[in-house]
Image 1: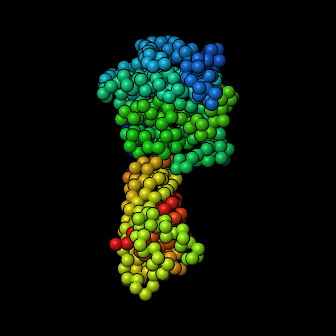
Image 2: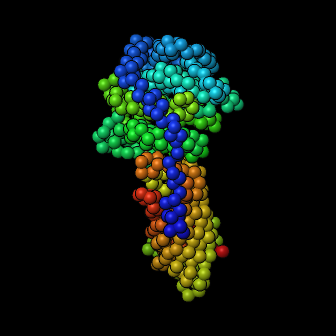
Length: 331
Length: 187
């Protein structure tokens, strides 16, 4: 039985997902347009916006604030306005989706770039704009990635619609994305969500990447994680295959079984893709793995000097190529 | 060993319903000449059982039920099936063969195991493992039961330790097993 299993195991790894290679030249061109200075400039702007804002009234959140002091250092309004302003400058139609419910009111930022062949099919590209402290990595890098992707991708034509979304109040329990997914109801228009949360922290030192039981990873915190569930397995495979084609950076894929809601998968659910997974939508989560490596995670040390701009750019480049591929870029 | 543990073990087995209270006095007698060639029992165990490899993790908490045959009071053949959760919903299937050593009712055992983990998993993709391996891992290993006791055909074992390996091409995965308790009843 062991021998049979071993032989089966040897042949069970299906080949890396084949790509439509005719698309590779245009994907490479798109990736090359991702601009490191623009990315870092946007992160700097966002950090400044957060620093200039009076934090969220944490008394609304009850007694937990003494245990979690970061709750009293959450800012979101100015970053949301900044995101809206930047998307409007690209001549994209932008709206705020405001949902007031219970104690919290969320105001998601939503911009859209229509597809030409299947406009009813939407690729949603998201990052949360609420942060703790100044939060250069978590998640000014994610928002900067979405804005740079909007700038570059809106210069091309795609089969599917691209929807750029800034989610509000992720840090308080994925409130913005949860309410957004609720608003979708049974609609299947969002065919894929690509969520960015923390993209800029990398470290080549062995042992710099933390892991937990059952969640192995390379020892050096110098890779980009692309995380999916069974529904989005093919997207993870394609992301890995694109990276192999372009040799952009070290990537590490993680695929959770089923919807991804098993107890051992809890760390994988910790961003705005989670509500999409749990409702059965395809979603991939792209991250530097945040608290598994960044000493500034959710504290005042999450500053720009911790970021690695060239690696951050590569992460966005690879993501740009993947999104363009999934959206059906036209030559 | 026997005299020291009997006051503790016998009431425990009675409390678990594995041994009739009226037979407690007889338990002091070692199983000897009248031992049947085959002694079948059903057993249940609970604890931790996980398979961890560079490209996948599966299992963790749960338990199993199975059938055991003790041959000539020495050799053990057993097979069980169970349910594990944490890294997905998993059905572990284990077959094992080994030996027990009887010192009165103290019967430590060692078994060679073959364990398959069927069901969900957490997968990790890298340059070494670029795609998800959907073939269930089957690990060859060893299970030790150093605190195992047999009274009148009922078996109680606590803190069993097991480890096994399965090839992953490249690399290997390791199956870990920690049974907190294993209880068997003859039929």
